[in-house]
Amino acid sequence: MNSTIDLSTVALETNSPLWQISEVGGEPVLQVIGNEDEDQIGGKVALIGEVKHNYRMQTEMFFAGHHMTQAAAGWFGFVMRAQDVLNYEAVWFMPNAESGSTAAYVPVAHGIVPWWTEAYASQEKGAAAIPTKSWFRASVDVVEDEFTLYVKEQVVFRKKLTYHLSAGRAGFYVGTATDAMFRRVTVEDLP
Image (cartoon, rainbow, N blue to C red):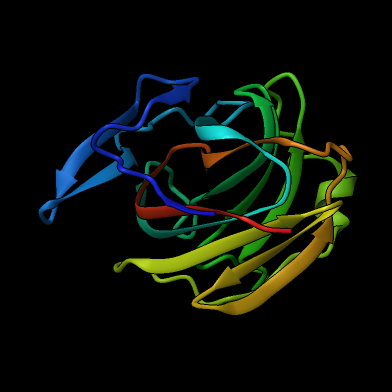
């Protein structure tokens, strides 16, 4: 079943008061603006909807900026199979990443995003052109023990999920000192 999420009435579970629903361009937008914390260990997480097994989540995303000195800083994307706002798996976009790898995956436990570990640094990442001044469509399919990430219907990369959870909630992630917006959200059950 395909379910369009009405952002103007959706019940969110978040770990930060920076998550807000505002009207932008005449439609509701879920956003984190003013995320100036450069020292955060965990990300800003917003969970939407019911526990799901296999699903596709689609949205339009907008990189609204960052609050760091690095010209290419920014981390935002999807939360997958979340047990709560502190325990989930995330795949995020990194516009203008110097390495050319603009999408990465990380499992998060107890709210700690282990981006500094060798396992994260050496893992396969994805590459896609991520606009920095316009909306773009992204989606993630979560099926059995892996996910597939898409930008504009093109596969960015596939990866096995680390926690081997059979179900959890879908949502969004915004990382260190990053501002981002999400609109036109749908969640569809997959076989």
